Image 1 (tube, rainbow, N blue to C red):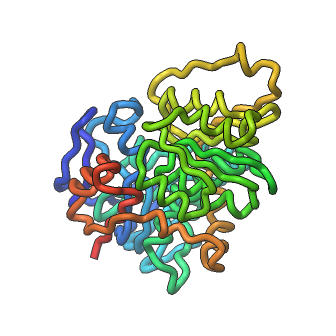
Image 2 (cartoon, rainbow, N blue to C red):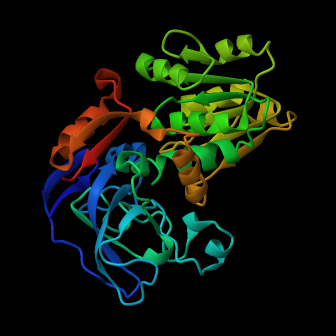
Image 3 (tube, helix red, strand yellow):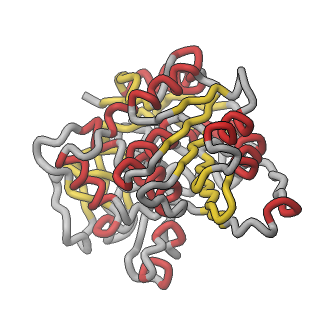
Length: 346
């Protein structure tokens, strides 16, 4: 089968690799119909995720159909269309019993990390009964793919961890796909003002179309000063970091109001400076989190009702065979006007 294989920092190839097979009774093999590229995949290519070894098939998002299943799989049958969670969960270990699936003792974020992932024609899914969701008939597969990771990450790690409440002021630093997912899902909680910060004018324009009241280009003005002006010098109740670099985390520290929350989403490959000399007396909460995907059923219902539309974060649609072009497009987002790039197989 064809697959996107990581060869080390800065190197990947689209080439043949042996089709996966059942390794445990709880496994299934899924034929991929939709997949996509995540900002985390770009961090992997930069060498920021050392757990990913050369030879690994990347990708942790997708929709497809089951073509083979282990004898212990009870919730799914061959032929079922499924949504793949980016997080694998056994459902039984102490972490899973706390619904902290990201730290599952048998799973967690392993797809495209410690085992081969979804940027291929086929993928093996361990612990299938608790790591897959039935794809409802008639639901757009592009939209479903956004529920694998992007939307639950923005919602759980940003909106829920940040404790967004009705009337809150909210700044989202980083208006890429996950930042936009945080924006889309935050609107379910009726914040009084949403501000987005980015260096990409296309992404900022999109954020305003999706409901941001203000969009600040940090390339042309000081983002922290701009946010403080908009809030009368107080700062925002919730600052969501959705990039994963020291400068954006520092911006969040500068703009959070007394009693506010900083919710970190970004994948950080370098140390950041914690401004504790300024934050120690401001009753500020800082949260970190890897998505658990516990919100997928709720977000699916919200999407099917029309309350949220994650497809508005999709900018490009390509065929699976154009994977390298997709990485080129996504990796040069400002030049290409790229947000989420969806790849179809068929």
